Structure formats: C-alpha cells, structure tokens
Length: 274
Image (cartoon, rainbow, N blue to C red; front, side):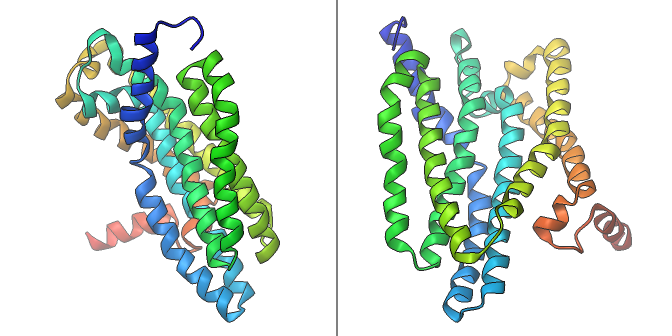
C-alpha cells in the first residue's frame, strides 16, 4: 500500500490474517452459542404463530449478543498488549505492539461478525432463507468494492474498515427485515447496545489506568508471558466490577437476564450459601 515497503506491508497483513483474527474469535464463541440456543425458540414461535414469544426471543437474542460480545471486546481492546504478549510471547522489534494496535480496531469487526451470524440465523428461523443468503453475499461484495482504495490509503486498517462496513451492511439489511417481520421496535435493540457501551466506559477506563500504572512500574507486563496471564486475571476482575455495577444500575442486567437478576440478589445468594 501507498508509501510502505513491501516487507512491512506483508508483515502487517500477516498480523490481521494470522494473529489478530485468532484473538478476535475468542469473545465470539460464548455469545454466539447463547444466541443460537435462543434462535431455536424463535423458530418454534414463528412456526406456531406465537408473535409475542417470537418478539421476546428476537430481542433476547440481540441483547445477549450485544452484552457478551461487545462487553468482552471492549475489555479485549483495553487489554490488547498483555493479551497479545500472553498468546504470542515477546516479539522482536515490538511486533506484538503492532498486533495489539490492529487488534484494537479489529475487535469491533468481531462484534459485527457476531451480529451478522445471529441476524442471518434469525432470518432463516423466520423462514426468510433466500433473503438471508442474498444478504450474506452483500457483505463480501461491499468489502471487495471498498477494499482496494481503503487498503491503498490506510493499509491493514483499511482492510479492517472495509470488512467492518461490509458486515454492517449485512446487519442493517437483516435487522430491517427482522423488525418488519416480528414487529420488534428498533429502540429495544439499540438501547441495549448503548447501555453496554455506557457500562463498558468505566471498565475500559479502569483497565487503561491500571495499564499505565503497571507499564510504568512493572515493565515486565510487556515482556513476560507468565506475568501477562497474572495481569490479565487482575485487570479482568478490576474491569468486571464496574462493568457489572453500572450494568445493574442502568438496568442492563435485568434487560438481558430477566427482572430477578441484580447485583443485590447475586451478593445475597453468595452470603446465604456461606
């Protein structure tokens, strides 16, 4: 791409094709498994003509995908450097820093990929298999059109951005049809996404602050694989606490898991068991 030596460009595309993509797939597995479990209920409700249940489980599928995938990707972006250090060790010439930088943008491709898979699956469950296949081809087509100019000017970030735009097109088209078929209001979906971002802000800030402290006083964070897993555990817990607390305060936990799920009830159950 423009102004970059061939070897450098080759290395950078190796970063997203071999290394970053593998890390991005980590947070997708659990959320997609949960969503697919719910999709079977959507199919059953659609076949029986139960629109109330169909709407309920459609919204539930979107909410769970948003909560688990977006929440975990925000944490992954904040923990990009120690995460790469743990999985790939210390790289010469700070290549692991380059992987981490690519991962920070590539993570959001993973979020949209999860939504693409879930929305296409919902479309199929609602008896719109032909449209689902048609829309699934739209994403690669959009990426193909945008890829050359974006890669030329932005390098690997252009490739990631072209993929993100292609996935977004598929998600928007599928979501529009799902809303039309089920009668689900878009605000029920967007509200959960916004709330997940809100809950993720203090999580990311706390992890970024911790990163600064440890990188200043414990540089082995970026040099030692064994230490990085310890740090990931500590930072993960510290980031999870404000994420769950804010999620509870703004009603996100209740939206995703049901009205009985609150931090207060969770703490009370732990106390009672003890």
